Length: 118
Image 1 (cartoon, rainbow, N blue to C red):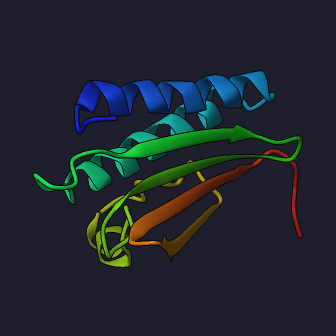
Image 2 (image 1 turned 90 degrees about the horizontal axis):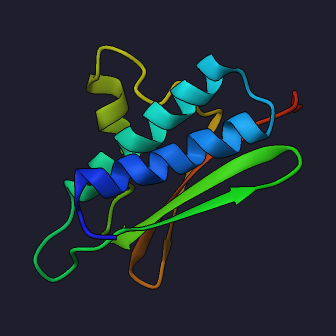
């Protein structure tokens, strides 16, 4: 998707839908939505003229919801410096944040567990 805030809101809304359909409370689904929107906006801020698109993949599993944000960059969508510098926890709606580089792309995976995990 292009770096349009409306597309980020749509992806976040899709994550909220998955959360509610999976049995999360309205509050937990809302926090998941806010976390995904924040991560999309962070990814949009890293785009340039040559790499101006972000791919967002929503996956629902029996025990979790995973949202992968993929774009051409050398850094994660949500970096540690961003998390430490914000006054509030902008991604409190997710339980795990993972990052990897694949073929020149940044993949940031945000996971919300639906059941307690060890």
